[in-house]
Image (cartoon, rainbow, N blue to C red; front, side, top):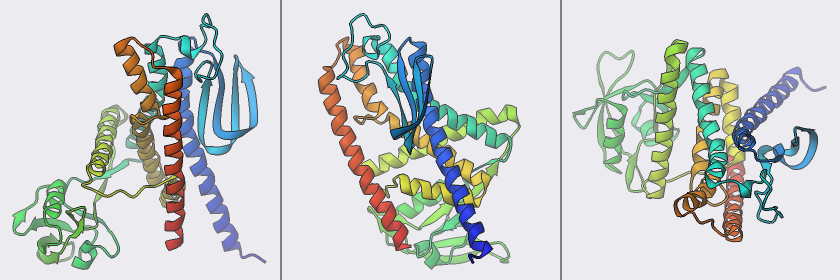
Length: 358
């Protein structure tokens, strides 16, 4: 007989998996709903709105559009008439994407990522007005201490307030980051205040050298932000903008080779979402908020096959008033899709390898 605790654990894991799939599917639906709504508003003919990819397992047609659920849940798409260069489009077909002015096609593409960003703001607003949202504390207070890191070897603990580095007082977490990055592989004296200790502690840390910069392996402390519904909206916009700026800043550091990157694919993302779901409602919603911002920014990158890549071609058309050859654009997007798919496979193998290493 299978022990009840095993059955309960399995049921809990299945429930978490279902929540993760539904949450990710909701983010996709929000994105595609943006494309769909603007396409319909511009008079374009939307042939299919699918949640998921692959074979259709359920569908219903309404208002000229087939609404479908497909077999592979991570993803989705909106099929707009005339969007593929292989389609035969009559010059007088007003419902075709290709016969629409460039500015309308631009709005259709832009609204998908915009909806993810707006959704992130609304989710942040709801959290701030109810459960609260966790944000990094700007004070130089230690949060997560990574196992085996320079911070752990130095004896730092979560909750420690770092007062000074080599005798220089710290006013903020960014001051600490700057001080650590400027001392790769060099011993640094930390003055630390710890709860329960009568006075400051003196610790010595040797930052790890990563891409020529120092790293302690220490995260900032997190604090919970709450506000009234009226005040929460402005705070939600500010927090979402700040997190987006952090993400773009980190991406810039990776591109300029000042920071290394650990790529995560669908498996890794699902794993992080499941971990946050086990931690509670607030951590899970915070993770969904973060992923919604990432989806918005990622889709706006000027990479072929992504919305951002299509926007580049449309910007060229709007500025020059000349349309790029559809075959050429289609080939560029195909190459981009193959590259992204290859990168996706690499991230999947990397995610699986990380799981087995644990």
